Image 1 (cartoon, rainbow over the protein chains, first blue to last red):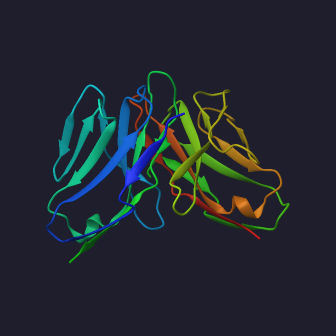
Image 2 (cartoon, rainbow over the protein chains, first blue to last red):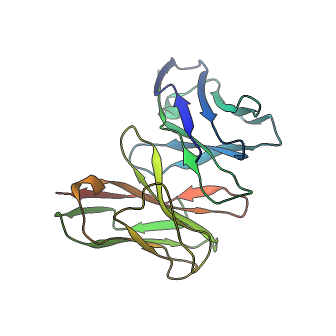
Length: 113
Length: 111
């Protein structure tokens, strides 16, 4: 089955700096890669996703890059703000062959004012 | 979390007791999921349902049963709760574009 690894497990940045979270996956059949933000006491919330026919996608201060050859994808948050503090999860899914999602173990991001 | 509701929000059980976690959606999507979340382990899939009347095991199905009652509801049952099942349980749906949306979660403690 798919194995998704996520690094780092914790990340602290100064407000205004950039944050980068990286994930690797093992199954070449995976072709959908979402990122979720989870605030304390709440369920994960989809913030951005990328499909394997695209190398990069951007939405305001958030961007995701995908390298299919190397089987890794990354979340980039620019101009970080205190409200970006949360746990972020990456996931991988082979949408052509099944309905399952495989999650990384999460990154706790703290933005220091 | 709009559109996916879970009940109860909190529950404390004694070892050996049974209970059912309820999940309902108001978005008319086919795919529904049950995950458990434990510290340092991310989200692990227990069971999922690709459509009404079908269910499939995920990564950690032992000790659980599910029922896709209709398109709107997907329940998770613990027949004989164990302390190892202490966790936060999330229900989720997936759209036709594969986007997942999660409910607010149920915090379960088994003593």
